[in-house]
Length: 331
Image (cartoon, rainbow, N blue to C red; front, top):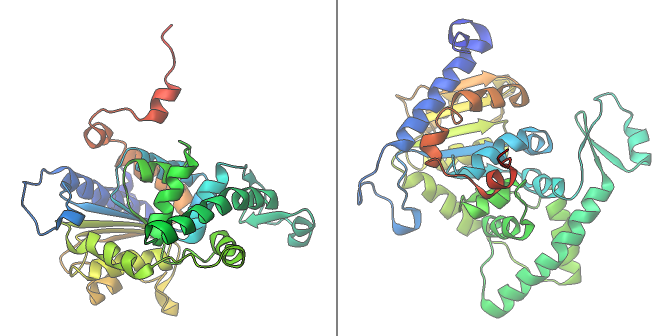
């Protein structure tokens, strides 16, 4: 893969993306002296570079979930942003299987069989029923804690709680909970989670999720960081939410976008890194990279040449609970 950078076309973009992420990691590993930087206790970090990871829900539906879980399990990123689907599909995969199908399967026939299609992936309706059965009692408890203990729930606090409750080492958000990685999802109601919150509002009305507290916390992760790097897979909400947080600090120091969007319709999803520079979301002297590619193809390759090669330094050689579980016994 060392030759990618001189291959041309998107191979060269991929090579540049690997370089950019390695720079993020190297800066993240630089020691930060006590009292250095401008962070308050709430945002205090020993990281020389705070790495934001954003991804759309389809990537959790796919096998890229395992790559993302690897990063969370070993605390290789500092902030995660995803959509509602990117949250719920992780938990749903702990309860039922997602199957490989085909892009050309008949929607009508799948509907009659209670099967939902995500590209060429298939998810049975029953998986969502299991998710609802699991989530409803947790929402009951959250409402009880709100009313009796004054708990102030936000989407990120809810995701943290769900990561604790799932208690499954296959889950991205279990590891985010264990490693205290904040996970933001400002449109948490846009999916099955929103459906269940809607149903719960009739059964036991009154649960409140405060997005204002979360935007203060999200933006603070950028404002008080020594440096920031953005790795954004896909477009839409996750891309803009991370970029906009970095606008609050006059731009990210490092940025890698991986998506297939084009900028000619004026969409934020397709917008180039240079457009983000014009808004102050990426610093003017930064060298951001966009890879025009399907993240399911290139993100595992990126990890293999970046986070995986720095794994010993990033983890301090520590094994996680999941690794201990799967270590083979000596002969």
